Length: 431
Image (cartoon, rainbow, N blue to C red; front, top):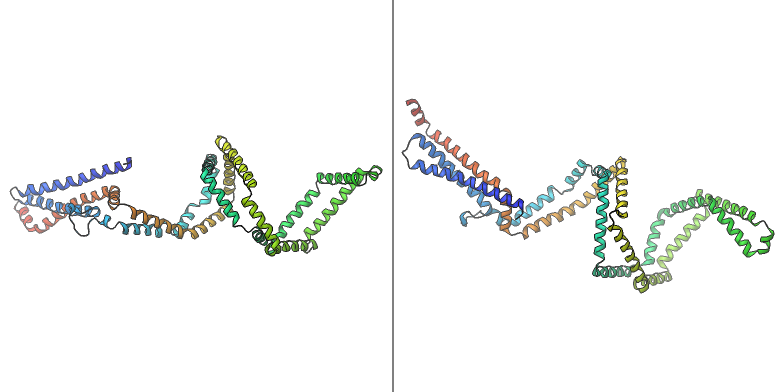
């Protein structure tokens, strides 16, 4: 028994002794007043003791009947908790599901606590960001230890081969390209590429490379002319001419959505997608690549050696108290915390996304939790469950017994005074 349970059991026994002691006291008073000479005052005390004894016994029966049969007698509607264990579990599960894990309650909880702001504040603290890095390193180290197991490695290799065996490379690539080109999305990629190419052509290193290439071409293809002509001058002028021409062409394409090269680019991409979808030769090539990836022993050994090298490097890094992985996660967490703290719109967007996720996931999670509670309670032993409940609330129930004793005695006193009001009045007048 753990210390908390032991303390609860001790408190329960103490409360039971107090309640039983009070019952024995009023019982002794009742029998004591029954054996002495009668009198108004003694009758009053006896009535109080009798009513207190009845109240104590009634509450004792009610409390005991919750957990077991009083005195072991087969009285109906006793041992309530053990006999209704499964129904209690089902009702508890439904209560938790409908009152604690329902979407409105969870959304209201999110709105009260502003989780995005709390996350930002937590990550902004240096110690917390450092703790995040340390925990990420520990989790990664544990994951590496898990996959290092020989059985796990065989399972992963088998799973990878199975996954590759089910792949349709040409069809998958066609689907990806189709998604990238839907509604002209690939034109945005082309615009970005054109802009980058223009920047590259404007760089001095690029023009020097073009000039060098021209000079080398002249020396190789026209060695006599190269000796007679000013090749360095031709290289510089040629590189400038070529770079300017290409830059002008690319700028024209970038600025003109209807440019012929754009149309040709569209047509080429669509032809590629169509061939990936319908051309048997491309399908055959895709099947060859898939079989190669799945069965080639040399490639398998290469991938395995590569993975083992990466794993060993990661393990060495994670074993270091100044792990690069931990530092990177620390820096990333701190940066994200600062960014989130300084961007109210981002926090609002994140909170709204969390609310949307909660509303979508809460019913399934609530049902899972409710089923888990119900199944767990059903597996419990009825007597053990009854004991655990009594251990946690039994002390308060013993005070109900004590209160029943006191209230019963007061009620007995009031009833006695009411029923003997005339006699008491005459005694007072005579005195």
